[in-house]
Length: 355
Image 1 (cartoon, rainbow, N blue to C red):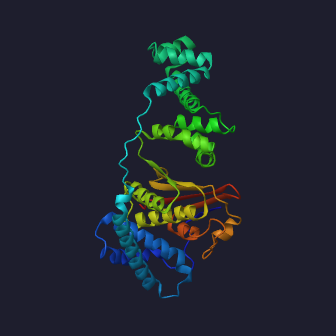
Image 2 (tube, helix red, strand yellow):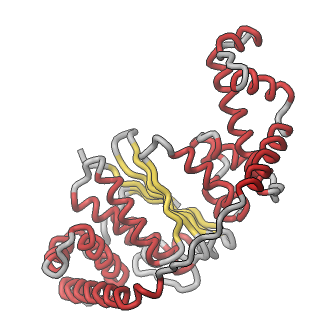
Image 3 (cartoon, rainbow, N blue to C red):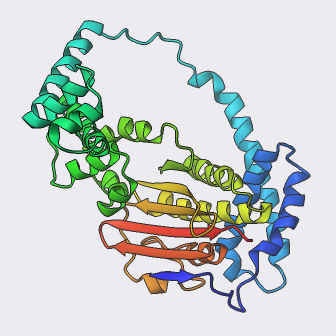
């Protein structure tokens, strides 16, 4: 289901108008800017979820009371943390690793990974990496171009990394989708990652999720236009909305739009925590057709039986994802939901910077 930024229905208040009021209430009690902004978004999230049940004319009063309660909850949590800090300090030294054993295992994994390559792939890789031959001379030998050889080498290295991780883990992929997903991650090919639905596969496959960490970290080196936050607990909700706000701020969004983006992220992340076993929120900066930010929230929960019903204002269910989706849609410019019973839900939403 896909929709653009639709006008609010008469029964729905404009959440944007509450932002200055909530900021004043929170700012009078919390002086650290980042913490205060998080509390503002937490307040707006709660107001957004309960707004359909608040009597007309009382929404501002409800927002003020909610803001005060959110601040009080923060104070109680900080006090509890201070009183229990001594219990989380572990003074035991870590066990020293067996360096020789690890080195032997790694060498064996490299050997097994190389064996998975074809003879032609091994020859090309070793000629370049070990013998130091450049891509131009290799291209002349193959009757190809230097660019084509460089692309070949990148694909071979990507496959070698995947085979090395599988050999080091002593594992065989459980499904036919595993290798294509891992190869797309290893090569940093974002288009191919979308084609194989890599994000959802990593949520469903424990092996690939474990092996993907070094591949993802490598792919993100030198890139700062995307962030991925695993979602399991309330603390992850805070991390997701803060990451979204910080990333979007680099594109020059207004403070109001940054709050709307962070609040929408908070809503979809909260649904993952409440209704799904695992999930993630991916925030990506866009340059075309104009500057914007895209948010993709995936989970492996029960899915939504009726997406159209879940998108109606005031809809709420404790049997699947649904609470807050209509509100999140109103805060963003583009919004789409794809859900499959038994497999989970993917929410994609975009906010474009105003000209």
